[in-house]
Image (tube, rainbow, N blue to C red):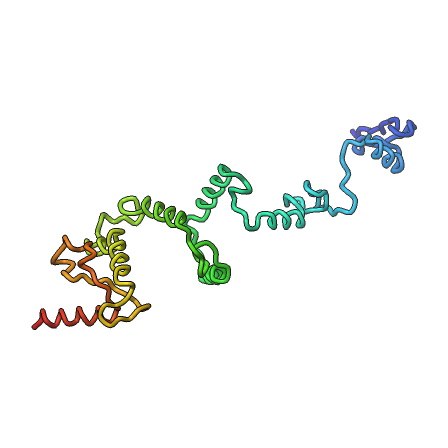
Length: 248
């Protein structure tokens, strides 16, 4: 048995006239003109979309111009923001704590990332065309920066290094790579005025030579009086003669 559905009677909120509507089409105004007047008087419950915007747009919170609904800001605001960030560190923009969190999140995200050969070539090309930091040619490094770099190296050397394999590096290589050996090398060069003591050449590749053998006299390894400055060719020639004499 079919049930009859009656229209609903209601008063218009603007003109106060009576009008009827079906229950499935609830209305508050008798006509479109009354609806427009009611919207101006803020009698409608929903907000109308801004004029001039498409269905997939809404207002930018920064400037009020149209933007994509999924985007946080419009293109102009996004461009201005990134132009503002250019040349500044995250600490200057976001603060120390926020910058630390962002750095950790980025590090976790990129850990184990595998780049294609094309991507590697692009990154290499960009790094060569836009050098920064210690990669800038002719950049003068301050004493403080050198000390900071040395301190970072100390914190990650030896057993503290992630590449530590239990101390398999030969003793000879460890001694020649130590700071004590490097200081001895510079002192020998300074004493001889950065000049080869056999051929007198200057401005070439120089080697510090032990007068008393490095292996035979371990006590004299870092004695400045036991060192002499030689160029690469003279050093090779000297060791070649020593080998021939031993062989003879």
